[in-house]
Image (cartoon, rainbow, N blue to C red):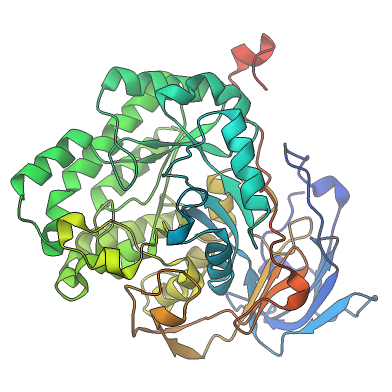
Length: 490
């Protein structure tokens, strides 16, 4: 019998862990954790017969869910009717460390993650040193382990130089990141033959490709067509067709090579339609978006200027509606922030010189909760897009569910309390926000990482230590049957 996913599946008010339900250990072993009992929490979404939930965690994993659990010597947190959800999984962040820690760094980025209810992040290194060899990936993992307050996965880079190392790196990364179009820090690929070789190489290791999908040649045409562009024309410089054309090509390459694909930060309704069609044909295609693509539109550029300059560009309200429809039906599996901070003085340069990207990992749950408060997305779809469904989209193990056997990552928040966003008060080193002044609710008050309170009322408790994050566990590579039979890469 499959493990129930949410508290609404409680039977007789109690769930306990069956060791047979645990997922087999992947490359990184379970790091352990604390023992904790959370009592008197509200469920989310609220539903008949499951308005209250208690959670028992042992050695970092959930072992019991119920309605009247009593302590057995572990620490106790009285939720006092705060709402309880699983720790969030942000599938796409840039902490720019190692290499550009002055722009963020793991100490600031992971504290910001906790502030936003995030206990697991998947990070893309888009500045040197890139992860193009097993040694480089190992060094990066150890660098992060010493600094991160949240559990983490490090994507390896998919480039011609990294192809020989892909089989070895496939054991230590959930996916390979490919830039089809150039963005901050990396140029895009323009040669179809080279792209086909990269897709084929990734497919041979059994790991999916996560892609920044914009057509590099169309991006160059956009810059030529708008030589005097400002932030108001950014959605024209980096056009709808640039994304759509690139997604179409990537899907074709998946069909040719057998690769699987996840489209990061999808920004167009037409792109969502392409992914939906590919999934209907049985292809291994998925997608995620970011809060700014559904809460903002190109109409906001007049007010926000470079603060909403991101790649891909933020497009129309109709595109936002199409993306929301994709989130509702599961075509768009996850909301990841694409947290990409830059100092305010850099963002305030003239448009052509200002770097692309915005911070928002500090606000992931309040921004996602806002979609529900505005009636743009139902509560279950919103929650799934930043918890269990997000984890499954990249093959992450043991994250994102309130169920026995899953990691004891929890978020407690007061659902009715509003706060206005003040970028200067957020943990991110950038100290600005595109959502400045917006009244949001759902700010986490207590965040638990594998049974250890890691964030309480705006700060990490001393007992949480300076780091404590561990490498995420993920499904083993899905090596093609022919290679597996021949004793190929594992």
